[in-house]
Amino acid sequence: MTNALPVLLDVDTGGDDALALLLATASPALDVRGITCVAGNCALEQVVSNTLTLLDAIGAPPVPVAAGMDRPILEPGLPAPPLHGRDGMGDLGLPAPRRSEAGVHAVEFLRRTLADSAGPMTLICLAPLTNIAMLLRLYPRIEDKIERLYVMGGTFAAPGNTTPAAEFNVRYDPEAAAIVLHSGLPVTLYPLDPFVQVRFTVEEARKLTQAKGAGARIAGGIALHYCRFFGMEFSLIGDAGTVATVIDPAGAASERRPVHVALSSGATRGATVFDRRILTDGFAREGEWTDVDVVSKVDATRYRKLMAAALGATEALDD
Ligand code: BDR
Ligand code: CA
Image 1 (cartoon, rainbow, N blue to C red):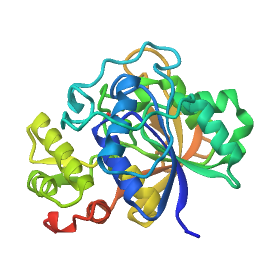
Image 2 (spheres, rainbow, N blue to C red):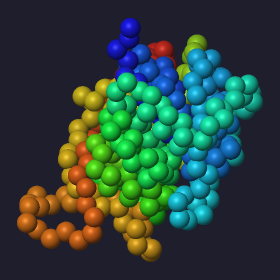
Image 3 (cartoon, rainbow, N blue to C red):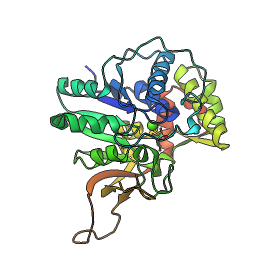
């Protein structure tokens, strides 16, 4: 009998999704019951291949990996951002995967797994929300089996990263994000604001690449890839921070705020607009707004340590 929280992860692996998978699979606090893949950081086939490659490389126990939606609901999808490398996972040259995908569509896998679960489950969504939106639209009654969605996406007070107003996961499939964030399900949103707060220095990344564990060495390689790409002295743990908030919620400060997903074409498409006014009751608000818990700030030191400890490489950190 274990107290680990059963979770499902939805990913577009993705260097920083890989860091998130390393943390989630290594943490005794989580029981990863399945990983669903969606197009985003790279094409769907590459996302699946990267995910299987990573799991093999760390000798992870068997866990179902299901391929899902290969494009957004409405638009053709954005070009793969170059920052993740040619293979989308930092070009580490890992051996091709021996394990295979589950052979069931991700949306169907999510439905089955949730339906078969004794109680509601936690979903950790680190990618465009296409799979999750399709799940909610196709099987609305499955909502009863969702405890909470932890979603990496959007911005709170920070600027966007894909457009001046919009973050990548939401901008990639704004309709999907609107369906999920306006579903009324309990949502904890992990936006770009905390996403950019948790970092490894380039020196720490180098030390990770020398660590004993395969997971730590891969994490170091990915971090070094990002340092090189951006020409910076540090790299973000990115999506892994969302997993950290599930494992250690006390390290995150959140606010309950109404959010609106902007769907109009033009400069604001894919923006997450929050009503951050001090007085909101009785004041005008046009369009659809839904309360979510938004993480505004995290304890970066605590989450760096959490990540390094999960990788068995606390000695790699300078603090
Ligand atoms: C998000 O977009 C992707 O590039 C990352 O994997 C992360 O999920 C950040 O905007
Ligand atoms: Ca991602």
